[in-house]
Length: 403
Image (cartoon, rainbow, N blue to C red):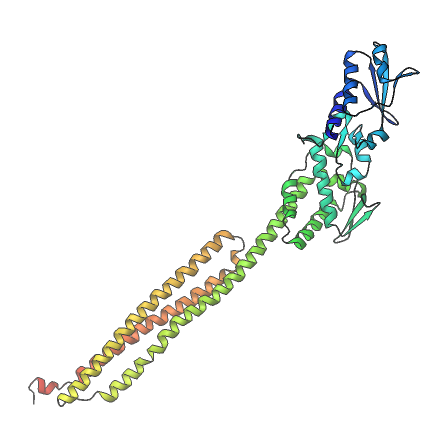
């Protein structure tokens, strides 16, 4: 028969057989009848053996119970024998918590008789669940403590955190602390199950513990933490989420600063690609001024005409290039504006810290757009001047019959 079955049977007989705490174990006082004989028989069948059955000063064996129907009987279960059988039986939560190893680790099994609490159990609720949660909390803070004072390998007397000053938290609490559950324990434990940012979590844990417990009496600090765990969990979660938000934002800021450099390069490339080709404008003007002359014959006419055509083709190509670069410029602006809009939506509070990235990009965008517009003007000017120069050199007097 399993240990759990034995615990369940002990819980079942504790009330009908009137169980009370005894110095050496647990004493059962009952009247011999068919029902009580049946209960005792069931106990024997699952391996629970009473030490003796007494009727006043007379002791009887189990087989003689049928001969004593109607008489008052006292039976004893010895604590030592129960422990030898692998059973942990306690009268109350107070007795259970007075055994120091139970403060730090949950026993494999136990029964608290006067509250009918059995562990392990399919229904973990009430004080039992609170006790298990408290136990996991103690293990967690012990793991992240700077120092632990141990009585034995299984018993920690107190944990010590070194923050602004030395914060000592004795591992002691009473059953009164198990009245309410630990609000937020699942979220709090879940944060520590994730091993990322371990050092920062430790720092935040110390800060919150110190702010909450530094003014509490030393021996009452753990109980104070349990009673105010909701506030503690909320502070820790908020501080950690703030750190994660800032950490994530720093990563995003680095990414956007790198993107800023990339966008600057793209914007500069747009200007440079056009600027190099715009050097052809003064060259074209110089060539036209040197090569274009007054038309006096067919050769001079066709020379001027071909020169004009070549420069017109050049200016047309430049206009198309500038128009294409303006499209590229608008595309880049649309891209970085969209990225900054997403950033502003996700990190509204921190956006002020990096909005200068978009300001710098907008400034460069406006400058490049202005340059491209001036390139338009220069191309148009070249076109007009060349045509004007061509028409100026035509033989107007001959054409109009004035000579």
